Amino acid sequence: MTDEFVKLLDQGCADLGIELSDQQKEQFFKYYEMLIEKNKVMNLTAITELSDVITKHFVDSLLLVLAAPELGLKLDGSAEYSCIDVGTGAGFPGIPLKIAFPHLKVVLLDSLNKRIKFLNTVIEELELIDIETIHGRAEDFAKQGEYREQFDLCVSRAVANLSTLSEYCMPYIHTGGMFIPYKSGEIEEEVTGAKKAVHVLGGKIEDVVKFQLPGTEIGRSFVKIKKYQNTPKKYPRKAGLPAKEPIA
Image (cartoon, rainbow, N blue to C red):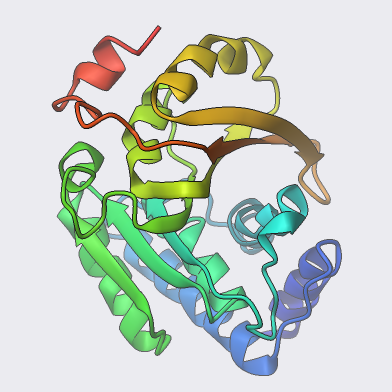
């Protein structure tokens, strides 16, 4: 673990009010090393510079604590939450959230098995517990009783229209839970267009919280969607339909 890494990570986390232990910093550093090494042989991320990985992947993933303080995410583990990260890719935001908040029970879902194998290696190397991966489509696992409406929180940094993403993600949260997608800065039109879909799926858009990623000019928006009733059994529809024909 290098001094530069520690300095940059400490700075980024300080902006979020997060103080990491030495063990957590080591975990982040090992994750960084594994990400860069694996990226040489498979496409995990276009972001590879040390400072960019810390800011645009690690700190960005942890911005959730500012966007939704009511979740009660505490470093001391006084609150326990189950969280599913849909379309996790190289593990963002799920793994940084798990490292920073070890008490979180996390499921990482992705459709590409090569990424899932990488994530399993990361989980083993970092000695993380109460975290599992599942390989497959969001549409399929959302129909299974083991996962449907079983989570307090669903997060996703996946690039998809909010209406489509809501259909993939809302079925995973139980009533009273929250779906919080990580979106780019300007999303007013997208949010307006997704209101009907969110309502049909049993939720309501409560708020849109905007930030500037610390140390950058990058805008980040969090859409806070609360679930008030069960998602109708017909959703999510079969593969491809949520993207081709968003609920409108």
